[in-house]
Length: 169
Length: 176
Image 1 (cartoon, rainbow over the protein chains, first blue to last red):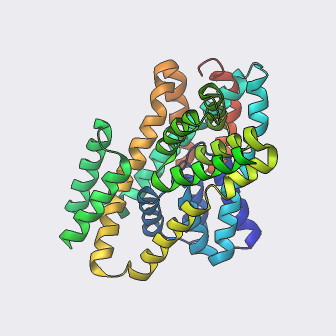
Image 2 (image 1 turned 90 degrees about the horizontal axis):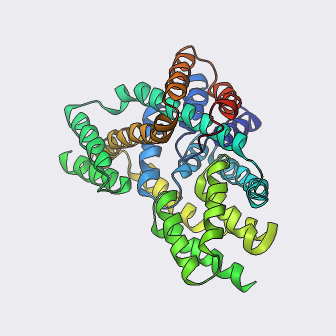
């Protein structure tokens, strides 16, 4: 995969996402399924790491970029994460002018719904590789229950799971 | 320059201490309001714009706030300097993972964390669907079903997402 092709994948994944992890479907399709540059296990590890490290969840792309292409890939991932953010400036101009932005918010909602569906579809593909034992199944189920309760932040849930895994080894 | 320097320092502090966009944004809003750097109403407008902007909400929020305080230079400073320390800590965590991840205990911890992260991924997907399901249930279910079918048929995600933006601009235009 050329540098430009990798940059295109990274930018594509960010530009069509409206949150940190909703880019995962694009990344998995391009880098795991088509190019074989990453494994599902690596991708899941990077997602887990991004949950317990500071900053936005989208920083998992830094891990992906570094894993695929070293420092160059890291720089590309950083650029891919940062450059689309400047689109906020024209969006702000629209909101400040009080213009009708129903089409813009409708488009965003459409992308969010599709991103959510892609995330669920990707999760079902990743499940066999992430849940490989009864312990993992129990951890996943308890994590989901804790998330639904809304009482425990997600980074704490993943951190506790990591601790349980370390103790159980 | 003082307001911009102060803004970037607050961004550094909130992005290092908190994980994820929501927690960082909430903490930043409180700090900016307390120091009268950015009014809460203005912050909320920038936050709404960040949510309408493609990509990571937190980075777009930083860019928008930086632009409010210091124009284009402020936006660049906010997303580069503001997030650099958090990115550096994340890369340190990656280095530790690469260096020690093969040790049995570390591998087991990562495996367990990955199972938990899978639950987070599923929960996040359902959470994003909550509001559209409440306001436009039929359209949402139809779009989800169509997306899953297209994903199973290996249609590139970017194509599906682009189509959903076009469809959404018509079908969902009154919901947000």
